[in-house]
Structures are given as C-alpha cells and as structure tokens.
Image 1 (spheres, rainbow, N blue to C red):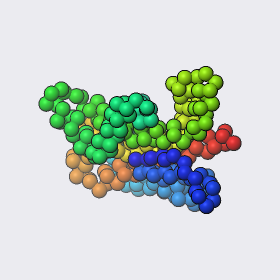
Image 2 (cartoon, rainbow, N blue to C red; image 1 turned 45 degrees about the vertical axis):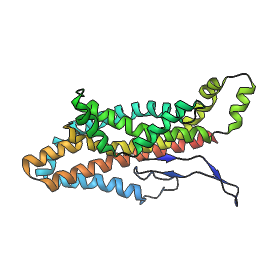
Image 3 (tube, helix red, strand yellow; image 1 turned 90 degrees about the vertical axis):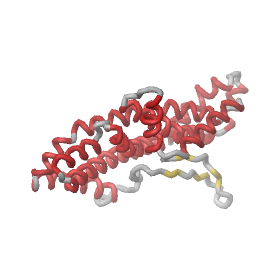
Image 4 (cartoon, rainbow, N blue to C red; image 1 turned 30 degrees about the vertical axis):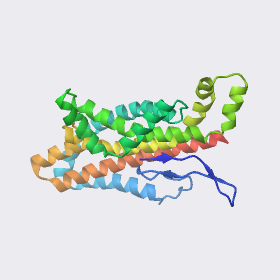
Amino acid sequence: MAEIRSPRRDSRSGRETRIEVTDGALIPGRGEKSAFSAWRISFFGALVLLVVLFVAKPHPYRDIMLFLPDGILKTFEVTLMSIACAVVLGLLTGLGRISRIAIINRVATIYVEVVRGIPLLVQIFYIYYALGKFIQVPDIFAAVIAMTVCYGAYLGEIFRAGIQSINKGQMEAAIALGLTRGQALRRIILPQTLKVVLPPLGNEFIALLKDSSLVSILAVSDLLRRGREYASKTFDYFEAFTVVALVYLVMTLFFSRLVALMEERMNRRGR
C-alpha cells in the first residue's frame, strides 16, 4: 500500500523531503525517455510475448485469451467500485485523524490501526463467511466491502499526511479573514491536498487492481478466476496462468504510465 508522509526539512541542506512507499507498479520517472527504459522493455515485452504466443501457438493461447475478456471486465468493475468507495472512506478517515474532537480522532485511529493489522484476504473471508452467519452478502459486494474497508484505512493515512503537508499558515490566514475552520478546510486546504495526494492515490489504484485477484476465492468471475476455470477444464495450468500474469502485467504497467503522465501534468501546472 502506498503511503505519503508529511514533508520534513533536512537539517543540513535545508531542503524538504518526502518519503513515499508503495507496493504498486514502478511509476516511470520523468527522466525515463530512453527507448529502452525499464518501463518500455517491460510493457512492450509483455505485449509482444502475448502476440507471439497468440500467433505461434493458437491452441491453447488463443483459446485462453478468448476465454478471459469477461474476467477482465469484472476485475475492472470490482476495482473501480472499491477505489471509489475507499476514496470517500479514506477522506473521512483522514479528516477524523486530524480532528480536534477526541472521540472522532480516537475512533478513526483505532480503525486505521486495526484494519492495517489484518490481511486483506482474512478480511474478505471474514465479511463473506463469518458475517454470513448473520447476514448474507452477495459475493461481489462482499469483495467490494472488504477492499473498501482495507484500502480506506491506507487512503486515510494518505489524506491525513496530505492535509498536514499544507502550510499551517494558510489555515491561520483563512481564519483571520473570517472563515470558519470547516470553510477553510473545504475551500482552501482540501483543493490543495487533492493535488498532493493524486499520485499516491494512483499507486493505490494499481495496488488494488492487483489485489482484486483475491476476490476469485468468492467465486467472482474476475481475471484470475477465469484463468483457473480454463485450467481446470483443460489442465493447461502453465499456459493459462502465463497469460493471466502477462495480462495483469500489461494492465498495471499501463496504469502506472497514466499515473506518471498525470503527475507530470500536475507538476507543470504547479510551476
């Protein structure tokens, strides 16, 4: 999961530094303009390999690729629903983490600490199977709820750090001009925070896209599930999971490039 931390000033150089940690795909940097950059080699290498397999050995690779499209759509459906809900929950959690109301701050902090201490797979099992004793949750909604709860905690920390990275003087100036703390937060702080947190949010989207493969355990027909279904029918496990891995690689690298382009555009506007 990606985390963005508040800028810290180096005591020697006087420069502000920011630590960012992510388990998403490597985001290509602005300096990677070479035709043989790591991103280009990985992305186009995966595409070329898929085409070569499709042409050189139509059976089973062509059959596998024709079997997977609906699984890819389901993967995107689960990912988009989860990230949309997680952003809302993460924003509320981030605001709770900086709240001056003790009970709200404590509840938000407990939520973050508890959820980040439980693996996502366990959360999926718990919501679908354990809570199933009391209330039946459809498989796809159980998956979305679990990923929303899990990623909401991580996004909450991203929003918290993003808000705290904004100069405190802006809040003080807004209050001095007659705005309430809530008005200053909505009109001044949050718009700037969104620009700060967009790149790590992109990282989280990529990480969630990969983690969506876990929903296959709930019989959700995502990309991985479709690959398993094909392999169980034909016993072509090596071929099926090779294609699934390459498709995941192409998707994550594609979105990592989009995140990089978005970050470059934001940097140019910020100058």
